[in-house]
Amino acid sequence: MNKKQHVSPKHPRAASIETREKIIAHHDSSVLATAGLIAHGRGEAFDYLIGEKTGAPAFRAVKAAATSLLLAKHPVISVNGNAAALVAEDLVSLSEVTGAKLEVNLYYRYPGRETAIRTVLEKAGAKEVLGIGEAASAKLPEIGSERRRVDPRGILKADVVLVPLEDGDRTEALRKMGKTVIAIDLNPLSRTAQWSSITIVDNIIRALPHLVAEVRRQKDMSRRELEEILHSFDNRQNLGSEIKLINKRLSDLAEKGVYIPEVVELYEHLEEDASKSN
Ligand code: ATP
Image (cartoon, rainbow, N blue to C red; front, side, top):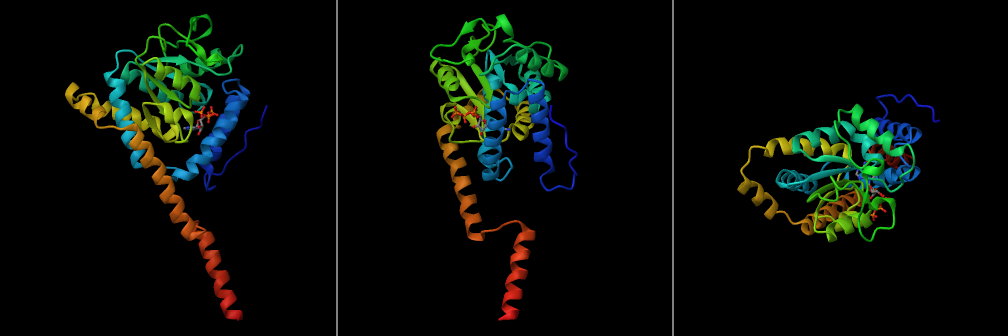
């Protein structure tokens, strides 16, 4: 059991540390598998690269994702440990505004874990959670891991599946079954990001509230307007824009070398001191 640290709200990375504490607590309660900690770290690294904010390409993907969920006949939100640990309330809100079902789907399925995730979702207000135990009785083709086990009332019959923090194999399998897959993944180079129909390259913590708000905004639009939004979205192009955004940000940072204002100041002082002593 890990002891929770007190984080001063003044700490420059307080939000990130708070999130880590949450992730660790959910690891202690079995919601998160140990590999989930590593996945979180990988996400944090990519968040640095995108500047820890939702960029224009991510907003475009959020818009298309909202449309796709609204136009779906059987939308499903696939929930893993990280998603439940970080954004349970937002997942429930999204399920309510879109009518999408919540289904637990895990790479590491072990006793107690699925029910721990169901409890987190229920505490957040979920009325129904699919994919628990024997309910995950159907199998997706060509997947070796436990991820293949799905609920016939959920992912199996879904036409649109939202997969926050996914692994590439299942995204590929779902696409090959003809489903529309919406991913939220900070890494635009992951196989999940590449295989998805709509890829939101953003932190799930920021992306989900945007997605819920966008669904609410689009609720009164006509079918024609919604179809137009989907028609004008190109995931390949949008992923390209995302990679360009990272590229530009890194090029700008490379010009500066250091970018944190206090560190820039420190370098300026040191340069001043050096020129005085010469
Ligand atoms: P793939 O199989 O798709 O190539 P992977 O092997 O990287 O992906 P995992 O190790 O399961 O898959 O990692 C999960 C993914 O989730 C990583 O790409 C990581 O960037 C992303 N991720 C982690 N935390 C977050 C978060 N908070 N928001 C969005 N994405 C995240």
